[in-house]
Length: 170
Image: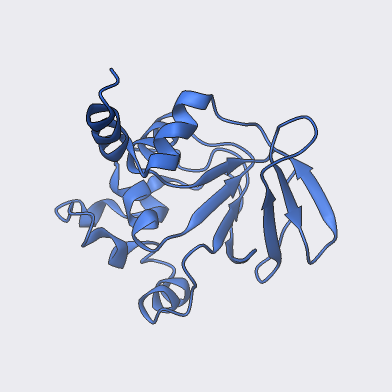
């Protein structure tokens, strides 16, 4: 179980997540410091380590729209954040898979900052559910294809590929 650290609305662009003026900084070890830098209060909480790794960002539709900058996904993984959104912009979704960002597509999600969230991985129908423990509600998810989920579970495309090579599978 983890708390919702930040609640956002629809159409959150990559420029809000990771502003373009920091594009010269591309190393995954350096990008986290610029996550939501224009939201001074939340960025300060991140830098002060007041947001626990594994905490959730909850957003509406079209999370990660805008540019194709991979840093918008990698800066979130750098803090160990997870994202639950009603849906994700296509390029952000693929970038997130590539860097191993934990994401959940949950079209009916209802949550506020501070709510306790649990991901119920095993259900009778097999689809994970999001449980808002604080509000006592459960929400269906839209699972990613198994191949994409396997990449996220491995920590991203590079660790996934490394795992395949070392196991002798192609």
